[in-house]
Length: 127
Image (tube, rainbow, N blue to C red):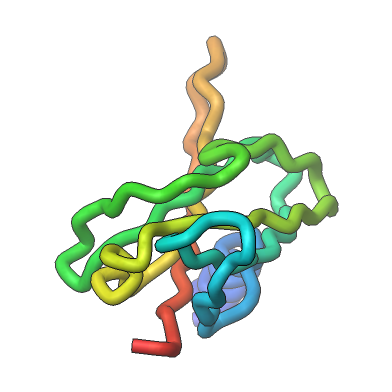
């Protein structure tokens, strides 16, 4: 029994070491730069020493991807570093956008080892 509890505790501690993304409920705001476009900013923090790349995505309520613009849709983020990303979307798609997500990108390597990709999503508050 003690071995099972130890194994579950080890698994939980391994899974909990991922990346973070804030805010939990982002809000769209208008931009002064472009008419018909809204923006939001997310912050990603990398707590995984085995991952350096993260992909950003915006999805509707059925998890269909929506078109958006960001400086980079895939960003390089070193271990224990953070990045602030501005994301832009048309006002027409703003009401369809339900989730914004960041997903760790596992690098292909010559070694065969098990790797876990993590995805974190936030839900837009101003629906």
